[in-house]
Image 1 (cartoon, helix red, strand yellow):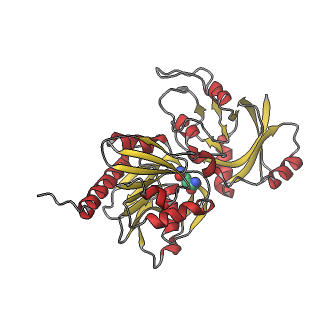
Image 2 (image 1 turned 180 degrees about the vertical axis):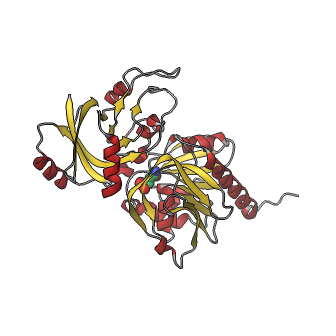
Length: 365
Ligand SMILES: NC(=O)CC[C@H](N)C(=O)O
């Protein structure tokens, strides 16, 4: 069935509906990765967003058992140039279309995704709606105007109750704001004894688990929409080593007194160069964010910039000047994308060891 994508600037794109057939309103964002559509679709940070992929053929290696980043995808919709009908790969289990149907995610194919992406780059991220051809542009615009974008996505995607991924190593409490499985995968691969807790866990609840370190996960939406999380992070700084990723990085910045702002069209892709300001070394990174820490808000605070995006100079990493806490705006867990930044998990593990040695009351003779 033919359907249209209406944008708030009045643009119309006509395509073929696939996957789930319902209509949907959301923020339209683009990702430039050439592969990784399964991880993108299942990354909870895309909750409620209409995601377009700039690579023109999507679904060609199908959907497999292994590449999920969450159990229940929460992305709003998928917009592509061409959706492959006959995937071919040794891991392929089903087509993109059947997966989107099973998970109630609307898809739209046959779209000039290059034109769409250029529009978003010019105007900034746009609100859009996938709806029947019969909807007039006027009615569509009115509906778009009166439909607010969601603000409670973290609540929607975070775990409702705590659970553990047991290990014999360091106890890491992972606060789940919409965690990608990749973060858990990296911690368990290092033998960590992980306890995943909900986004609104209090500092008392976290400390009662006697963590050796605390990880702040990625997650969807505006970091300012989760003030309760900021309070917890604020209270954790200085008590236990902290490592924040993406939304976790933004919450760490807010907790330290900084501000965040919405970017024009964000960073979403698998080849974003980021420079470590201390070593000068550049990592090619996986990214997915629409907000950023405001440079001017850092004056006089106890945090400093450690990493910067080479494409636009925005802040990509922060560290506390006196306490054991650091964060990055990009994804060291990759999935999808390059693993250049994976060493940051080692940095976290080393930070935990140093902290344990310094705070241990038991002396080894
Ligand atoms: N991947 C993430 O954690 C994204 C963080 C935040 N939702 C943003 O868009 O900036």
